[in-house]
Image (cartoon, rainbow, N blue to C red):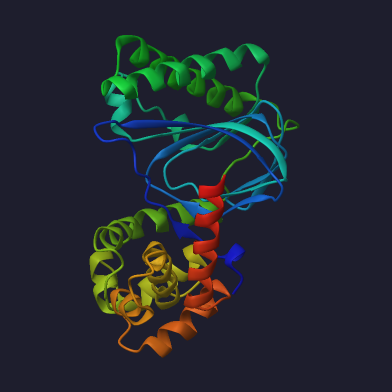
Length: 300
């Protein structure tokens, strides 16, 4: 099955001690930027100053353009495809506890996706947030100004989401269908397992053990998992095991056989076959690619 049809769980890593994180991207690359369908247990905001492309949220496509703002609640399934050229955008991710820290009630509107085109004045809010965030990270604590700006941002998003709920049906918006709502519930049932697999670095776990963690039968688990991820549990585990050990391949002092062992394969030949199935190249070819990219970076 093509990777674009498969869904992955992304474990968001925030700066130590923080319940929120910012990044600003200013890219000019000669090839498109693609992020496969995924979801996570954090909330996410994407604000584009300059970019062209498409974001798909729960199977619904939306155009990416200048001053486009996207909000994703926890467990929302989304993917990203940006055209080649200049891309300037903010990525903000935060945990549920941020609402309590800022004394902002989690109203029901925060559980729906949001897509808007904002005006130039709203740009000032994001510039101010990012500038203050850089200072706060350097100081390893959030200042009162940083906390105030975070609260303004959440209230800003809440106002936009409430407007979505009252806009005329003729305007473009996104509401989860019954099928999508069911998918969201299934994701919630699977989340304990996904966190367990992330914590154990996708170590060996049987179908029976996975179903037990979710508190459902093996048959029900298999159907639920495939309905969410568009692939079997076994195929998902294989892909994640391969992706987890990719950084190790960059170490030329570790043999392919040792990499295979760390990935949970007792047979390096079998590992190479499965690796090529997932990555469309052998472990040796991938290692050479990493080496060339490293040498290029040092020259740059």
